[in-house]
Length: 364
Image (cartoon, rainbow, N blue to C red; front, side, top):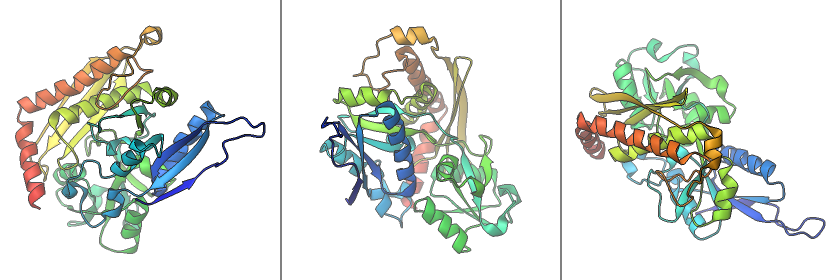
C-alpha cells in the first residue's frame, strides 16, 4: 500500500486551542481525490474547527489493470486497503463510490453517510472520429469498450450489431486508450464520474433505462466509518440525503438477496415520487439473450416531524448503511422492497440465469 497525505499538521490554532484532526482515506485516482475533496469541503463548512487530513492510497483494483474486474473474484477490490487503514486507526473515515462497496461490509464497519446522488446513468463517450453519432448509428462490428458485465449484457441485446471488449484503468487511462488508439469506437462510463471530472463535453449519449439500467449505488458517494465511533458517525450523518439513502438501501437489498456482485449482470432503476419508492430490477445472461425484469413500489414515510421524533437506533445497519437522520420505518420499507423484488425474480428463475452467467464468466 502506498500512501500520500496532505494535511495541516499543526492541530493548534493561533490561540493555542487544540483542534481535532480527522483523517480521510481515499484512493489515489484523480476522480477519487475530487470526490473526497467534495466531501471534505462539506464537512469543513459544517465543522469549521475540525482539521481535515486526506490520506491517499492505492488499492488492489488500482494495481491489477490487465484483468477484467469480474474475473478477479475479489469483492473488495477498491476498498480493502482503505478498510485496513480504517481498522488500524490510521484514518477516521473513508470516501468511496457506493457502487464499489459490497452489500455486506466487514465486521466493525458501517456506511455512515450516503450523499445526494448525481446522475446514476451510463454515458457513451465516442472516439473523436465518431463525434455526433449514437450507438445505433455506429457501423456494424464497431467495438465498444466496457469492463462491466452488466453494461455489456444489456447493450449486446439492445445493439446486436456492436461488439464489446474489456477496457480497464481509471477514467483518464480509459479516455486515453479511446482517443489515442483505434481499438474502440466508443466506451461506456458512468455519467457521474465524467461530470465530477468536468468532462461533460465528452458525453455523446446518456443511456436511459430502456437501453441500459445502472449499477446498484451508481452515482452516489458513501462515507465508511468504524461502527463503534459514535462521534464520527454522528458527525458524518448530517451528509445523508434521505431519498438517495432509501433508493440505495432498496437497490443494495435487491442485490444482496440475489447474491449478486460484479461477476454477474444485475441492474436497477429507482425513483421517489409522491412518497412512493419505485424499484425496477433485472438480471441478465452474459449475452443478454435471457433476462428477467420487474418493478415494485412501496410507500415511504416523508413526514419530517415524525422523522425528528423517531429515535433511529445507531446500532441498526441496513445492507451496511447506518442512517441516523432518516426515518427507520422508511428504511425498513426500502429494504423490504429490495428483498421482495429479488424474491419475485427468484421465483421466476433468476437464480438459474445468474448461476449460468457466473459459470460462463469463470470459464472465460
